Amino acid sequence: MQKKFILVINCGSSSLKFSLINPVSSETVLTGLAEQLFSDEASIKLKLENKVIEKQIHAPHTHNIAIEILVQQLTELNFQEQIFAIGHRVVHGGEKYNLPTLINNEVKQTIDKLSRLAPLHNPANLTGINACEKVFDNLPQVAVFDTAFHQSIPSKAFIYGLPYELYEEHAIRRYGFHGTSHYFVASQAAEFINKPIESCNFISAHLGNGCSITAIKDGKSIDTSLGFTPNEGVMMGTRSGDVDSGIIFYLVNQLGYSTEEVNKMVNSKSGLLGISGMSNDCRTLEEAMTGEPNCRATLALTVFSYRVAKMIASYTASLTDLDGIIFTGGIGENSMFIRSSILSHLTLLNFTVDEDKNKQARFGNKGKITTDSSRSCWVIPTNEEFVIAQQTQTLLSSTLSTKTVGQ
Ligand code: AMP
Image (tube, rainbow, N blue to C red; front, side, top):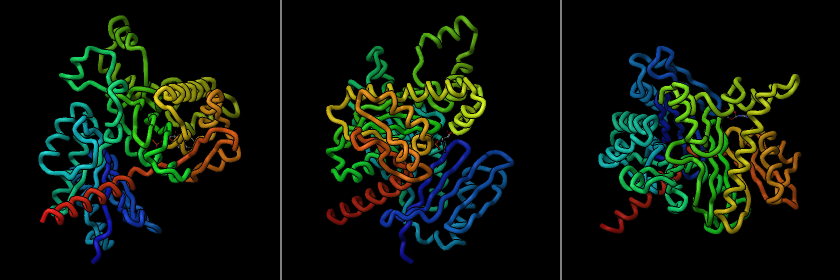
């Protein structure tokens, strides 16, 4: 049987997302999610073109059990024999990895060491790698790092205004995240304007529950708003983004908060949720603005749009040319209100939204949303899974051809 699929795995602390993708035809034949792992409610759902399969994940409800059930299902559906590699999303590659990397023991050790920079993500990613190793023992596994695309940012953008020793001795610097998403939408926008990506200049805004803005010069990331952790830059669903660091000390020293409480506050209780006091979901807040307008929902969305617009404008300092802005992520792909509101702050940069086009570019539809006389702004649905499959395939073909040449 011809082996044509790559299994893409994105392992979180209590979840496991997966897709089965043909990287050549770019067809996704199956997607799915195992969630609420480590609880009695743990379940796994597989979605095919015209079928949904749902199973409970039995005790001990782990990633390993989820992957065993996934393999059983793939076998029953006749896909198992057609998989030739596994591509893993790995959040933190530190300064070591700027490209997709074939996983071996040394790579696993490095991912493990980098867990101190991404304590919520890298250990989970490693769990997924180990679980796949057990059941797909002879298949190559590739790590595609979320930080890799941003390894091209120059020191003036990644060094903090802190003692330099913190960088030298503790690797404290800007790393950035969502790299795979920014790379994908930039490549798509380059196709829109029929230019090689190497000569494209964009500002891409990934606006989902997590948000980041990236300046892309000649196809490369040269600055990005998420930093040492995924809580820098613009405000997000539950994360504060930039705040005066003095507030943290005030909370701890004057108001008696513990550092753990502050950590939880800035990561899980702030952003859209914190300001609105209602929800981190943009849809809920947009609904709350209509009818009997809710002031805090309105304020939350207004602050959000303004902060994103300011970050976008600040990146004109990083670029000498700008082909356009790209919106992606759940909010960027769907919220015409937020997009319109962001662009309304950018009239000095000659952005004018076309509301008809803005309305059309939603729910998976891509397209330009600005008027003919405006600078361009596009909505492009992201597809990180496809990039992971494509980069896994590219790496494996080049490894194979290098070996052949070497023989
Ligand atoms: P993501 O993290 O990329 O999945 O994005 C999740 C966020 O996208 C949700 O929290 C919503 O706030 C937002 N979102 C999804 N659909 C819509 C929509 N139709 N209108 C506004 N916001 C949306």
